Amino acid sequence: MAVALSCEGLWKIYEMGDEKVQAVRGIDLEIISGEMVAIMGPSGCGKTTLLNILSGIDDPSAGQVMVAGKPLFGISDDERTDLRGKEMGFIFQKFHLLDVMNARENVEIPLLLLGLNPDEARTKSMLALEKVGLGDRSEHRPAELSGGQQQRVSIARAIVHNPSVILCDEPTGNLDSGTSEQVMDLLSDLNDAGSTLVIVTHDTEIAKRCSRVIKIFDGRITVEEE
Image (cartoon, rainbow, N blue to C red):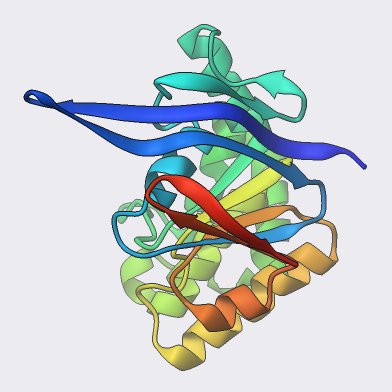
């Protein structure tokens, strides 16, 4: 089966004065296309640092990340930006929507950055919004949407360019329990349709819905459960 995302020998060491903090320690990991994987662990265990490196937001101290068979590090900034833009989608705890743009315009952003013409970007963004149940809210700005609707807009933005893998950082962290359930239903539906998801979460109910759970402690993988 195809590997959507992998890393080998991944380390992240922060220097804090005379002290060196090993946030990620020699992690090897493979995410197979079509998986929905939860990464769990206590606060400060390294799970968010790992996600930041897997997503290319942060550089590793050592090791490599491969996305759709291509290296994420050791390439130019422009090449990395292009790879991230084509192969990755991102869903955050904070929705990171632009307040001055409506839902459709927020979803169009990744497509316009990839060079699609505005008409094609509009068509694809509307299809993505319809997929998350917000086709009738496309002209609404974030302030006119509920928290759950804003997160669904961010999900539409993450999937609009059909990425190899979608990386999620506590995607229900700012939502009430009922809305969280709706968002997880949507993410599960995307996974059932073939999307690959990696979800950093502290929520055991979310983990139960994943095909695999990876537990991190002190920067190392301690347990993998299927």
